[in-house]
Length: 411
Ligand SMILES: Cc1ncc(COP(=O)(O)O)c(C=O)c1O
Image 1 (tube, rainbow, N blue to C red):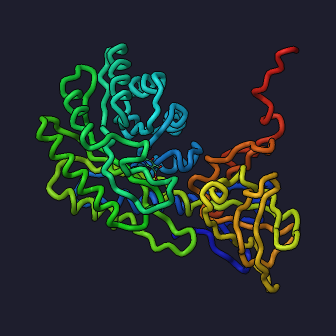
Image 2: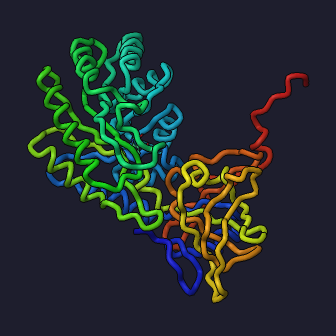
Image 3: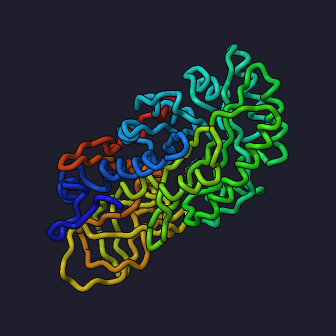
């Protein structure tokens, strides 16, 4: 459910016309709806009944500080995967005790920063990472809190690039190796095992997949307990799918109820790390048609602004900002980049031409965060709508931004 609707044939974000935003801030621009973000975050935070819960929004999905502030005010913590995301979460005012550090390649500097800030947990993905963290903590004479991300061997049934829970994936530690790491933590002076975690993939639409992972986690939890470790939390990761086209999705409360059923009687806290299901439907990208050429509408937005169609052949609905009564035609909506893979949508029925505005839907997750300067194109602006107000939350880049960090050795 989102707050992008037509009013008298013009597409609005909450109570603001997207045409007014384009007039003031130009195109391409990402536009986010605060009410949608809040609605989705609360759909999670209000779902915990039997267990104490914490929702850690996955910053990789949408990392603008103003957005993180909105989610922090909904009582969310954050799931981060880099020092840069830690920096952003702290700038947004996050409580470090609500920050989980995930990711397979944490550097020593990132570990030290996390320890220094007193984050809730490092989610450990390998034995070498655990050893490195122990060394860093020992040098700092501090104890690092950890959760082991074990690999439950569940195929999430999603796009090959977004499956993370199979034995062959680069993520997590095998069930067998987890036991060895737990034993090491119990003995360690500088590590404290506080949780157990897994994350099986993204854009998952089958509840059974989450249920299978939860059963594996429960089994693992009991084995860990038998070794003498008492944990504070079980973290089930993110991954809930959204509707891009006609996918039937699971509601956050159904997911949390499923977890609470599996973990019935346990006293650990339940953590989840949703990204896409909170922010995807809260964002659209507005773009202007520059040219109509046969079956192509060539827009001022391109794959550098929204990579998902080129990277995953992902589908995004395209809506006209102003509807009309003209006969629609089937178009491929493409960008100006010199790649045949540069498309935003294929075979969409539109009655639009040069100068018209389009809204690319469901781009609030893995949209702006994956943008680049490919073809020396400045990144788009980001705007946050709150009822009848809108604010620029990231300026459109200009040409000086493109070259600001470049040095000329012979000058
Ligand atoms: C460890 C971890 N947690 C959470 C997420 C968020 O996933 P989603 O956006 O599908 O909810 C990801 C995404 O890849 C992840 O790797």
